[in-house]
Image 1: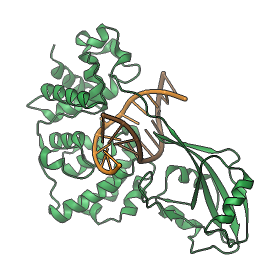
Image 2: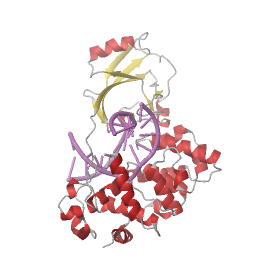
Image 3: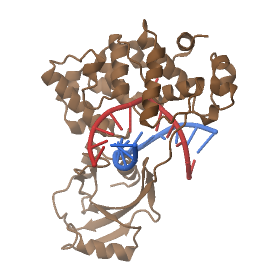
Length: 346
DNA sequence: AAAACGGGGCA
DNA sequence: TGCCCAGTTTT
């Protein structure tokens, strides 16, 4: 009962036909791996297609403006991936003559590329024996070998990396890496895995011990922070409005939004009047306003819940230069804002 | 070592 | 609702 051979056999029978499996060009492998970080294939696939179309080569990506890259990335989340992707494309073109580094050791030095992605690119694009360890690999190995070391600890990370390195097929590392991940994604799923028809069932420790649902072990849950956002949708008679770029560190860096007043709690209309009278945009202005959404729109991020109110504020003339309703679509915006734009007709 | 970083899908 | 996803960077 050879784990690696079995996984590879399963893969050749069951792999999905995906566009990045028809190439070994490092640029495309890199692009697909960044898009697929913490992202399921179903969600990432259309983004991969549009990126390949918009930026067929690393030179095209490098020459683009960051804002255009973020616009294409809009809705996918974890926007630092897009900023780092663009940064690294420029670096490869300017410093490396457009040539992608061809070893794990060199690849992992690039911004936005960590152990997983460096291993994936090194193996798939260059045939290097470098074992990938992603969420799928943690799950498959923890179950098959019955390992209950928490996967989100230094000990667990080292232990699973070492095990994957032991198991990887020395002759076909790319095939093994993709096989174990695909096996985890399709067969050894987090919930309701297909153990009944699993080719590895007889050797699977977790299955024998009936512990499939308990593995892998992951330590605790971080507490979700609540935040209260009040967006000022300031419009004049021509429906021009004001948007701002998020400069500061934190969520949505370099994306655009309406002027924001963050409060400690959800506020009332009279409390809003008070805040508006002190607001830099509004304090010297006559305006009428109404609340777009009666109940807070709750936008959920992995570690923050954003309770959001959109205040529609009508003024005679904008307090500073605005943009036309038509040009808003040119700016990258968070999904929360994009959702509002689809509901509010300018 | 822990926190920060999005958004969608699914039971 | 809570958990998970082809993770990496910052603190």
